[in-house]
Image (cartoon, rainbow, N blue to C red):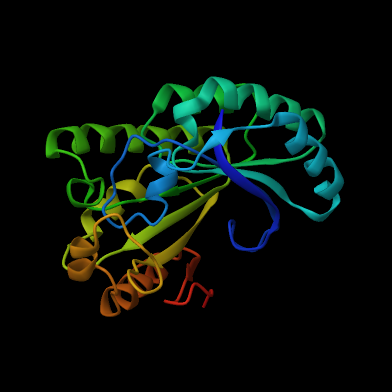
Length: 241
């Protein structure tokens, strides 16, 4: 597997949990606001040393709630990832997977084998604007995203549903469509999109137009709260509110 590295103890990658976080390279999306786009495109990536990772995980496992794998998009390397996760589960360590939920078969295979205990995904709306791909392909991948939401919900896997909040779009119809595919085992994290100087997004011009929302975050927080959904809001510095 290609990786950009790992962090043995992290307190920011899953809300309220301590994780051992691994970043895998590659992604099938081209999100204009992405600040991990170098990882997604494989810049500076290297072959994972599984032995070294497992040794470090064993030494820190008593400190963590999850082994958390993110990217990029981890499921672009799903076969190798499945082998790694099987070894991690053998250590009696719970696994959290952060995926864009557009690769249906790989996600269901890993969940079906009991290799995933917690999931996280971004509901990127509208997909035609936030996926960074042609409209037709974006809508096709959105359908896959909805199917993966149903898969996670049907298996009863806890979900951290992250919503990147942008300026200038009506995101609510897409959010409603996503929420309709879920049952009770999820919570929402609102992530206002930020750009320079805090991040280096893939498309700085796009981010100048659509990052740094304020009113949109407040409106979505209120609307989700009215539905009785548990919501956490990250402020522009990355700290939870």
